[in-house]
Image (cartoon, rainbow, N blue to C red; front, side):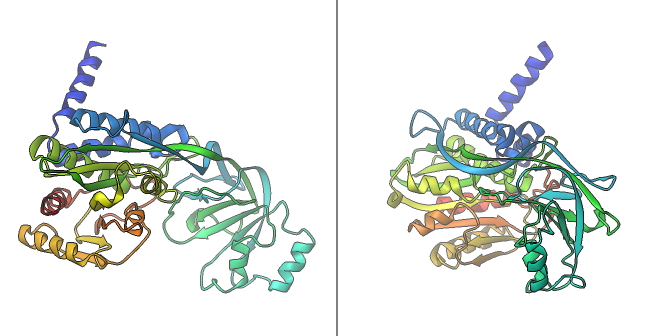
Length: 419
């Protein structure tokens, strides 16, 4: 017991006295991707646990609060899958995350069902499919759709949309399994299966999916700030979403190391820098956004319920996928805010931080979006190269290289100082 207490005190002390380095970044990423946080999603309160963890770091860093709490709470719907999850073709049991995924808009189901296989060679015409549907052919059956080859304009695509009333759909996937979240659900079950895990000899599917749409799932943004020494009423926002895809069933979770434990690690590194090393001249607000993965919900809520006037925000710098960098970085909105992009390029050239910094225009692909849509200048930076793991069970801390993490920190720091 004494040894455990000493260890916990050491861990706490190390978090308080961290410095900007790879070791601290790795510690944060290791922590947020651990099983305790359950993929930082709605199931098992993973997202809420992560929010409390980040709030504790804010407290250690002595970031100020706008209200009595670091939390800005909000509610939104989300479709979830918890409890037992089983998929078995004939007698072959498949592994979630490895062999298959449950589509984010699937409904729950339990039972054994016959399979009907379709590919580009045997798919019936639209007229024939309508006739089959009128005779209830697809009820209590799962249709297996093999999309190998061009199919977007074919009847296969209509089958994938389940326009003919099947009980469920199995889509064969040739590429990696990539998961997403949804706040709605369809009226049928839907799974995506890797090609190597399924074959035409399978005649039946035994399946159990426990699904629940939570109407008023409570999430929260985690917000703190350090007051500027010269211009306290001018604000710069640094942000990163901390939520991820959570769990699928009661055993499989999506760790989300690069997406976006790495961005949270960068956010906390910058917070330490401006609270303990170099106080900023303008007030810097640090926001860890919740519910990004289900549709940028947290940042939209903040923009609609800002803790400060939006017109006092000079700039927003949003960070995601900060764990690689061997092929440089991409700046979303770099083509929109050309003056600030030119500043960033000049800083990078002087410091020789990243091999390249590319730019693109507007994109609703992270939490910067709602700011720039409301006339607040905003960049979204993500690193490129390295591992391909994304929205899957392989996005783990152990294989995240953090190739250009420290150089990216210096680049962002210098850019914020210039602003």
